[in-house]
Structures are given as structure tokens and as C-alpha cells.
Image 1 (tube, rainbow, N blue to C red):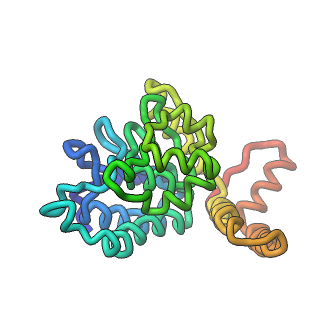
Image 2: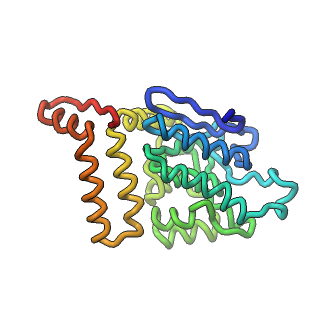
Length: 258
């Protein structure tokens, strides 16, 4: 697929997917959603970590309401089912770690896009906004699932009902994201995190992702069983053998992702 609304660069095991509609604050139209879905699936087959970020001053400001002749012309159920859901599932089901490098405002479905990633790193001058109530809607694209789990029901409910901006540092303090970093250090910070994951035990990371996401639906017994199964698989990887050998030899492990 030739990308027109995003850019994808892959190098040293890191795939950087940049939302590239800066004149529209990286708001999403149907083409962008399709391109994100395709790029994540493609990159997940070759890269060892995927970073999603935005070009310009915004990360993503959600649905581009100008993508239809009017807001009333939008079939929201169809759009969510056929376009947003595949995009979110491509990210959550991705076999390699995903990082949202939130460089600016993440509003509406843009916040949902960020929260779908495994790790969210935000510039301190970024913010998150559940803007849906401002136009008579409810949070979607997975936000009603992610927010209560990330920050607790009381804060999630307040964020959705009041549609207040949540600054990056506040989001980090509330457990909504992994970390907020000074704007001057932002690019260097997420690049370093991505490089760390790109050199790590990729199959072990896949097991971590699977177990963590499954835990919300499992009782303790089911989770213990899943852990046993996944640990058994991880224990047969080359990276596990390398990790143990490096520990015994008191050196840094050299993981190959297999």
C-alpha cells in the first residue's frame, strides 16, 4: 500500500509510524485509519517494536468531522465497526511492543489510539482529552475499556463526563500513561525506549503482552494456567538460553528476538 496520510520508516528493528496530516491536526479520516491498520500489521511482521507518533504540533485530534458532508452523514456504528475496530485490534494484537509517542494533543479517538498501545510516552506539553461529550457522544474506539482500567472508574467517569484536558504529567501521576518527559528531551526519550525494546527478547515481550491483556478476563486459576503455558513456550526460546548464559557469564545479553 502507498501511504498518503501516514509515513512509515523502519530501521534497526524500530518501525516509526508517523501520522502525517499536520494541517488537520492529524485528525483521522477513513484513509488514515486504513493506512494505520495496514502499516501496523505489516510492521509487526518484521520490526521488533512499533512507535506511533504525529507530525507537527498534534498527536491526533480524533475523527475528522470534515471527512463527510456533515456530521449527521456519518454512520458512526459502521465507522467504528469497520474502520476503528480493525485499527485498534491491529495495535492491541500486534506481536511486538507498541509505543505511543504523544508529541501533542491526543483528543477523542486520538486518545483512544494512544491508549491502545502497550506503552504511552508523552511530552510534558501534550494533553489528553475525552472530547466526545462536547458533541453529544460517548468515548469510543476502546476508551471506555482502557480508561477505567488505567486510571480507575471515578477518574475515567470524570474525564468522560466533564471532557477536561488532562495534562501529560497528570496522566502519568494517575497511571493513565507510562511517563511524561520534558519537551526538550521527548524525541530522545522515546527513541531510547524504542531502541531498548528493539534489542530485547521479542517473543518474551509477546508473551508479556498476551498475559497482561488476558488478565482482565481471567480469574486467578485461568491466569496461572496461562502463565504456565506461556512461560513454557518462552523457556524454549533462544533468547531465554542467551539470557541465562549472559547472567552466568556476567555480561549483557545479546537477544535476537527468537
